[in-house]
Image (cartoon, rainbow, N blue to C red):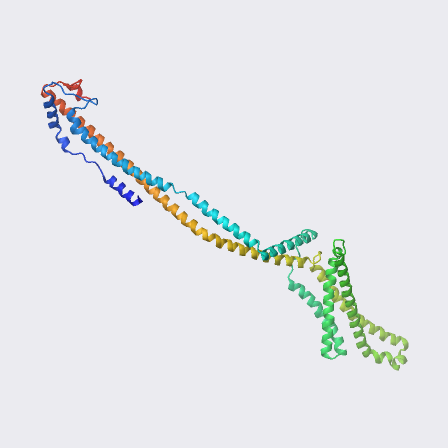
Length: 421
């Protein structure tokens, strides 16, 4: 039975108010006369166990109690259907429906997760992430749990470029005097690059020297580091000698007339020549000092920028890259799982809507149940009150008629006492 059908029956019941015919009240005297006439020969009026006379029972009590009985049967019938409908609606096991759908959802998601995480590409990415993380954590421990120094890469590049640029201005005039412009620029760039690279590697090497020569470092790595720094140092010394020699050759050409001329010997003798040579060497030394100074500034800059743990920055960069790749894979899995979950979320949403709808229907039906209870109780009380009033009216009228006709006994009561029941 549909809810609308039940609601219609309830509304019909609520509109049903049993009618007590007003003719009963207006016919009370005639009924009393009839009662007296039927029992005048025996001299008293009989009563049943409820102290009701036969005529009152037939024409008042039975008529109204039949109406109450019919009304009560209608009430029980409608309420029975109402309760049955409420029980049927309440029997919906939405918790089980939610559980079943969520169980399917979880099973499918777990299967999907296993498939995605068993993928070789994912496994390789995960292993790379874990290896890089482990390596980074070990290096971080060696660095007293401090992360790599945070600095802008371009600042470090600017420092190294400064070394190269300064070397250019120091050495280009020397090479430009000796070679054609193109060759001079090429040699100057080569020398600047070697000075800049040397500043970088020497600063890094000295900053990380304790660990580079420690037993923690792999033997082959130690050999490689030492070999590389030796090569860099030899290159530095070589380019410094080359630049100094070129500077000396250039200046010597300028001082040749003063040093090798007979006039120099005639004017100042050996002391004068030595003075010119000393001045020449001083100028060459200034060039060497300027190159070494710029190189040393670059070494200090590199020393301050680098961490004390070798390759810490590169390991950290590799760790960040591996982390980003792994997170990308994890996000792909999460998106896949969200997509899978959405298939079930729609079904769960439908169940929730039905649950809310049925709960609303139950509340409506329970309100109707309260309404029919109130209607039944109030109407029944009204009918009983009406019945009691009619019986009282009939008793009073019967006693009066009985006394007028010489009947002084009604049941086991005197007529006067029966009137006062």
